[in-house]
Image (cartoon, rainbow, N blue to C red):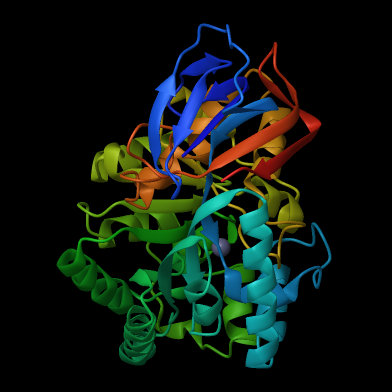
Length: 397
Ligand SMILES: [Zn+2]
């Protein structure tokens, strides 16, 4: 048993305890939370930390298997040039990918991340995830814009998922993005999702190029498909509508859905999303560090706040970020939206991700009976409850 305290404890649900005491079992399960009213009597059995205690972070979007591409790409080169670079450089020796994945996993652990929604296109990072202290939910991603490839693409994902499950990893089969998945492949993913009931994820509105593709069948994405992927897009019939409007309806409405990136999402898009699915099952994953790295652009974060949507945070991969740290993502958002409170931001970084990945029975908040992991924030503004640029995170348990 362990009793810990700090200047402030934020539980992830909007409650704050001044010098409260959290009692933990040997496996990290929370046995009690004591509100001392700010008056903490010195006691040999209480460990007091200077700073703020918070729940373990949930990273709702990562690609562990791209960790070997760290700092390979120039910053702010644009989205389609980034895709081209990924296609050119993602193939590497499996051992090299596995070693980089292992290192990245350890970094996330040290950065206080307890759970990750991790995209996989193959099995190269499975071993790292199996051996990790972090909980991984693997989104086995299907890729295949040519309808003729849909059977093969789905079979590949299904086989990979079986392999992951045989290693004790949980996951689901998901579509990569509107510009890389045919209607036939969307339909296959949807039938499997209806059977499994598990969470789904899709890269959504990360660029405007996907809209050009769907609206008119032209633009940079078509050139990418043709020149970089060798796909003759003549089979594709443009829909005169955005990529979101053309494809969101292909996904089942009962599964949790993580819409990842949302860089170009507008109020009209949000109204559309609300018209086709329950917002309570819809999670908007923001990866601001990656968006800045790839295209020096952030989503309209206040738009999501005004609409009271369920926001989560993701790091994306080391191919498009300087680190895998949810705290650093929080700093970027606080800088972009100075009015945001730490309580609100912390909810995005913890309990929302846990709910989206359906692990909120043990993760995401400091509550009795949960085993969420505890992080200590140091060099943090305790009176204004804000992060400083130099705020650090340390994993306590
Ligand atoms: Zn991604």
